[in-house]
Length: 191
Image (cartoon, rainbow, N blue to C red; front, side, top):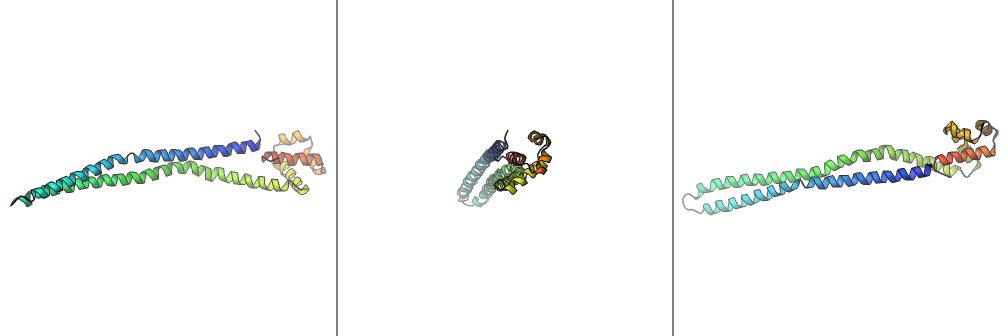
C-alpha cells in the first residue's frame, strides 16, 4: 500500500476512533443520568410528605389545650420527610457529578493515545514530508533526498535500483540520484 494511501486511511481511522469514543462517552453520560430518576422521585415524595405532615401539624395545632403536644410528632415526621427529600437531592447531585466524571475518565485513555502517540508521529511525518517537498525542487535538495534514501531505506529497496547503488551515488550518477530521491519521496507519500 502506498504511503499516501496509508496516511489517509490512518487519519480516517483515527477520526473514526475519536468520534466513536466521544459517542461512547455521551452514551455513558446519558445512561448514568438515568440513575438520577429515583433521587428525583425520592425528593418529590419526601417533600410532598413533609408538606402534608406540616399542614396536618398546623391543623392539629389549632386544637385547644392539646394542640401543641399533638403537633410535635407531625413536626418530627415532617423533618424526617425533609431529610428524605434532601437525600434524594444529594443523590441527584452525586449522579450529575458522576455523569461527567466517569465518561471523561473513560474517554481520556483512548484520546490520550491519540494525543500522546499518534499525533506526535503524525506531526513528525508532516515535518519530514514538508521538508522533503521543499527540497525536491532543487539539485541540492535532490542530492539530500538521495542521501537520506541511501541511509534510511531498506537494503532490498535500494538493491532494486542498482546492483551498486552506493557506488553510483558516489559517482554522482544522475539516474541513480533521481531514483533514490524518488524512492525517498514515495516512502513519505510524496511524488
